[in-house]
Image (cartoon, rainbow, N blue to C red; front, side, top):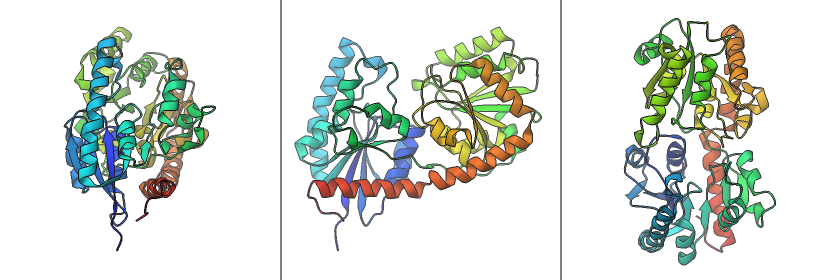
Length: 391
């Protein structure tokens, strides 16, 4: 009987947001007769327990991660030290566990490439980012990513970044899967739990509070006609900022107050039981101001049968099948977003029809089983190219 191949995953965070949940889906979805998983997380957090619950061996240690706050001379020196530490530490860890494949789960985690090269094992570098605003540096960074044996991209919009670069064929689309199936919750129960008025028209946005996820744009839309005068339209912003920085939440509250809609903008923070949010919502909005690679909030909302309104760029086009299963609006256009939401507010039959189409389509194209099968096929291929034994 063949021995399963060990895969070492590197991951930059330990929360319960999109990439975190996808790591659980990938590592926990492996056929244990073929592949076994160990995960190295850059920090401690709830993801540790989630991975252990699906049988993944977890190690918490610092990793070289390129974050915006480190884009300074001092920060880059720190990243360089962590990169060198990764080469030694990950090498020892991989040898001790008999690792056959090293899989870096985000393109900003840097230590996997040199560690895999030193070990002489295949490196898979997952790209979950679209590098808007980084165009000056992208050709060099993209070439570095393409040194990996395989570069799975979560959407066609992500893969397109590599067009024209040497070895671009190594970048291929591997859509994320439905990593979470929310518990069914009744609308009345969900709205009571979240403090949402029972008779409100609720537009929910799930995700980290950030400058580009669109929370401020949605608040702006609420403050414009034809929504502003409608006292029953409510925006629910479920999520917290990175490191729980209060500045973004405070800024959203201040802007809502300035627009006269402070009492209709709810910020409950991170909601672990996301089924409450989907059940409470009439519409789920994903109005990202920069192209979003393949946001899990849109995937999950579609699978839950929600009517989704999203910015017409990035991977959102793929999730909503070009607008067939949801409503696409011009990116960054608060007025256009307000008009689309008001139209859906007044047409519950259309909301229901779009939600039904979205649920059917999401299950067919983004099922967790498809992700697991595609991932293991990829591992088989990189081992075969390296001349390794496929379990």
